[in-house]
Length: 321
Image 1 (cartoon, rainbow, N blue to C red):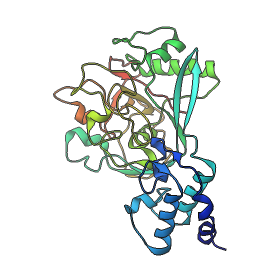
Image 2 (cartoon, rainbow, N blue to C red):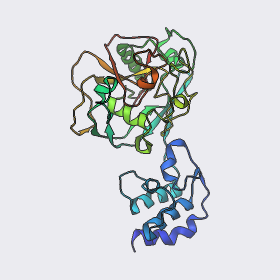
Image 3 (tube, rainbow, N blue to C red):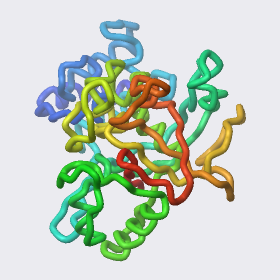
Image 4 (cartoon, helix red, strand yellow):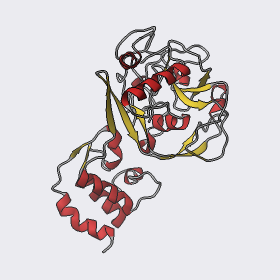
């Protein structure tokens, strides 16, 4: 008996299942877009595969986002109905301060800006190239001042607030913080690679192709020079498709890579060159200027760079693992 027939026989039992709460990062299982994952979703996909009935946008049926709609997509919903939505957030606590890491499913995406030749502001964002990444975890928020204080025992921020992102963080300081955090927790936290950062900012496999991390309207997701004069508490703007906050705006975030120009070649888990003079910064910040306003610097493809000891009041970090 093939999979579709087996699943057809199971539909009666599935109809009795209770609707599951849907976090932002689980939207891909919600075929009909009603805010929950139920037997209605698997029925809609089953009818599309069996009879070609398209009640919803075609992309809604491609559950695993591999570009094909098949029985594999039905299996994904079936597993969620039987076993629950996979855990997508892991909590850690250090000296009484809790922070969360979002588990990001691996995948392949087109990294860079297809319009990189249209403006001098975009020139280092191309050419677009395919990148394949293994699963990883990304901080749900930027490292806050209370977490920095819990690990380092000091806070030299220019704009003090427990829930504000830590600022005046150089790449070297970020490494010192991560080393102490790992010693305290026994974990293996690190800075994200530039490719991991962009994939997560775009929303991973749940990406809607937004210009900013979670929206095409910058003010919905970012603290930037158009709506503030300094950084704000993390997670006070809307999250992106993975439930991650502030990947556009608030403070720039260090990546592990040495900065280098893009090439067109496809890559798998790229880590950048072995040596260099400047490290990659991503995400934009609360600060802009007439030369680089937030609407340009807060895009998910925008690249910036700095030396190992470069620090300012709009530069912080986000953890990866």
